[in-house]
Image (cartoon, rainbow, N blue to C red; front, side, top):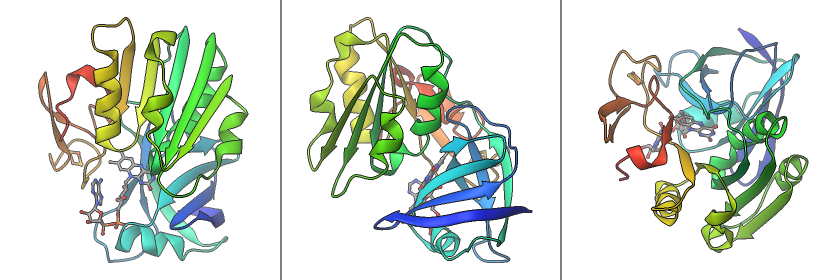
Length: 232
Ligand SMILES: Cc1cc2nc3c(=O)[nH]c(=O)nc-3n(C[C@H](O)[C@H](O)[C@H](O)COP(=O)(O)OP(=O)(O)OC[C@H]3O[C@@H](n4cnc5c(N)ncnc54)[C@H](O)[C@@H]3O)c2cc1C
Ligand code: FES
């Protein structure tokens, strides 16, 4: 069991959870989290939002019973973390754009931090429906930061400026980006979200259709080559 250092509200239904410990984990990987005894039965997947030698941070939005219970926990309370799981974003070189939509920004802060160490250029695009949050955290790692509230963030992107685009958010947004890069010399990586049960590739609950057949998001993903995924 790990100790909660902080669990604070940063926007409507959005919380930042900081847990004590020196955890492993790469950009775009996730942990299965459980902060309750019996109900709900299953742990819930949350992506690594940030990490230091002393703590790991998650950013989550209240969706149902699990995340609601999580939001009620206080500093000093204990929870169970299993992971890191999955395949995250690749370590690339060159010019990269990171594009996050809504709570899809969660895995992208640690990704920006990781990439910034060795890439040539990093532009960050964050799109929100009603209110923006945590944009200053992203600013630290961006050569250029673009934020849109209520508009389509995809309209601000000129894909020709980049070698890679890393994205996480609504599938419709990620698909739009993949479509924008068709026939161009830009590679996209998307992070796919599915319901999960075991989190380790044993139950097939998280199956997703790809050009290489059915894939387990928890084990083979959650990050995929954007052109390989059939979007819903
Ligand atoms: C790899 C991965 C990483 C994730 N990282 C984050 C993160 O960093 N921050 C964050 O806020 N969320 C993240 N999620 C989503 C998060 O796991 C779900 O929101 C959470 O499990 C919902 O649990 P709940 O008990 O609160 O809601 P539930 O009661 O389980 O569900 C509430 C409602 O949301 C729907 N729902 C729940 N989970 C999903 C899903 N995965 N896809 C589509 N609809 C769903 C249900 O159908 C239901 O309508 C991630 C999901 C995956 C697969
Ligand atoms: S959650 Fe069980 S196989 Fe992915």
